[in-house]
Image 1 (spheres, helix red, strand yellow):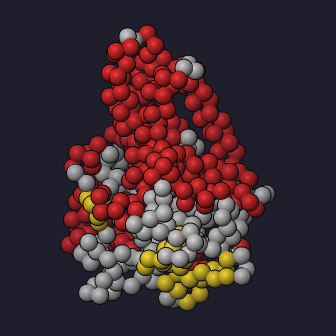
Image 2: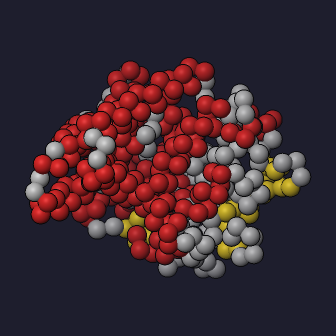
Length: 410
């Protein structure tokens, strides 16, 4: 049984999102047995907007949009596996070079900094390429998929079995709903260390410059840590279960696999550190900076995906996700990860066809499709609170300031 959420009674959590419904227009959950939380369907984002028309679920969009796309958009894309191998090779080369960095002349050390940036980008591409592979059908069979997932995600401290559970199964199945473990915390949830760290690190109108700077490099690792703790210990220790925004369960076999994979990941990182040696400058340039900067770039995308959207139980990608408008070279470098609405409609689609899907969405749902420039998305993140009071309201930590969602179009 999934560990009980502090905001969802066990009887409703076990029944899934449908069991949370209190009426066709709202969803309610008791919080700690003494307060209530309501999700309502979001209103139009501005007075001139029309109410949602057409499909409002992933399955509905898929039925309507798939005939408009070419068959090759849904064929397996093995090139992602090649990208995983290439970027692993880049990291391995960088670690080998860092292990010999003290042999370099002092004046030549700055020459390693550009390669540090190349290594950081390799971390980002590993995440995005592995993300696509584990959604798609290019790799068949549970064993090969797990090992490819391990190769791509080990540098990111993410066991592939945990990734499948938290991302593929729960996040995509219940995007930005009460049962999505990746959503923001509710105002009514306990002030656990997970909630406090997210408040200190995540972009908002309350975050400090130091907290944001530290969080960009550390938030990915903290997310993984709190999720691992919740999954491994949440069924026995309630405090462990409630450190994530929405607790979820895994099978005993999955839990064993997560432990094994986590031990292997620790061995990989220990091996890299042993190769470089316990020397501050090589460790910083060859290990700390590449991973920290890579995590930061990944989080710069991830923060914009759903945090500006209302909570909802319909799993409507046009309501719960935002796509970014970025320069073409960004999209080429990072595998069209900016097309996040598109990804939530067709997770297993060849990402090279997401720009084509974007044009279709803009034509068919111009008032509902949410896309922002990277600068505008980050401006909104930095000028709004991060804690949900209800499905359409975010508030500050103290609850004194509130903002209604969705935000008006620019």
